[in-house]
Length: 178
Image (tube, rainbow, N blue to C red; front, top):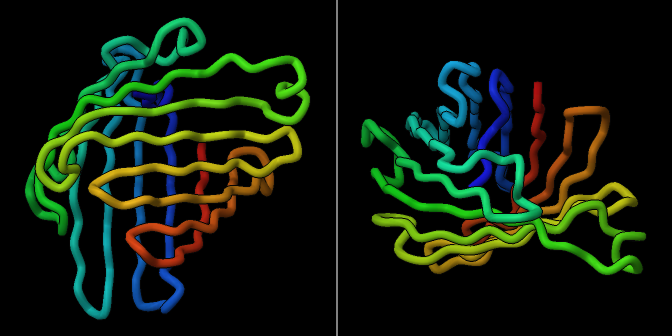
């Protein structure tokens, strides 16, 4: 469901605990003239193997009212079929969840995500993300019959360090939102 805001740029990298695997993303929220479109390039390097794929996601509803109704988007992963995972289409939704006053004292935001994808995404997927008032951001997802999770800690505005469990392996990295 959610896409980057117009003209936003996000750079993210993950390294596998073995040190022989890296995954890097560059995501761009397109200008206001084509609002709601996010483009992404992903590069994977592992033991001399390199792969680059390109994806697009378009918001049908925008991100602004997720406390009232879900943000809904459609997308295509690996448009050129040049990546390791193959082309996949999907429909995704994200919704902010209201919280009790006692929970709001510890949690900044709570969002749920759900969707359906073809090919490698292989059917229904879903997740939850929680931003705590103490700083850590926790997320978990079920996609392609696997459970993944991450913990992110904001270092400075727009920069987050992450530790994740993805595709049955520990990863660590950094995300920068410009």
